[in-house]
Length: 234
Image 1 (cartoon, one colour):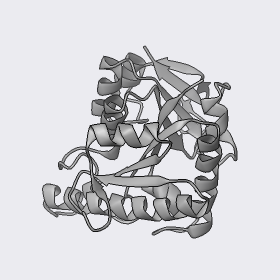
Image 2 (image 1 turned 180 degrees about the horizontal axis):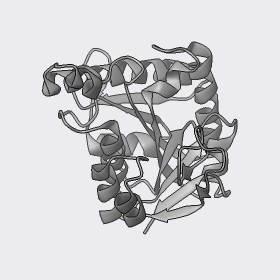
Image 3 (image 1 turned 120 degrees about the horizontal axis):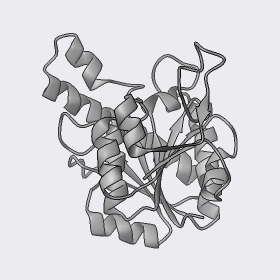
Image 4 (image 1 turned 90 degrees about the vertical axis):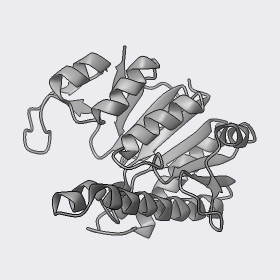
């Protein structure tokens, strides 16, 4: 169903059952799912968070300067990007890491046209370093990069199988939405992505599919157009 997609993974997704850092078996499991989709011929961009290593907003809440904390969080996303690159290439998938902050010894600087060319050459492009600016989340990075590379959809991987009217962990009778509009999300204050990211997607008519990444094969099911998770669109 989709030729080019942007996959958004939280940093916490890579920590698996551990409270901190990168859980290698979890990393390898996610990489295998991505490799499966790559073999279908789908062009993949990936944005990783850094919350498993450092969260800028949490540090700022404890008194650290927000801009400094956010830069540290951006560097954490690059660590995750390099780890994911290594896991992908062990599976034989060609990748490139591009960062919004110059780290030329380990990654390319983000250049939109070069990123698109990598995708056309069947390379998975992993975007690290956030937007390169403080005060913006990796959700906003995902929306921005998806728009720039002309992705058809953002795949928002989470630990639950879509968007619910209430927290499904606390409320077993919570109802899952199959589809929502951008305005539904904004007006109801649904915390699937921050408001800047949702607004950017709305302005560019970029759909978002929220799904459970812990169910094996779900990434493939989404790109094949199967009814998985919750779709946010106009």
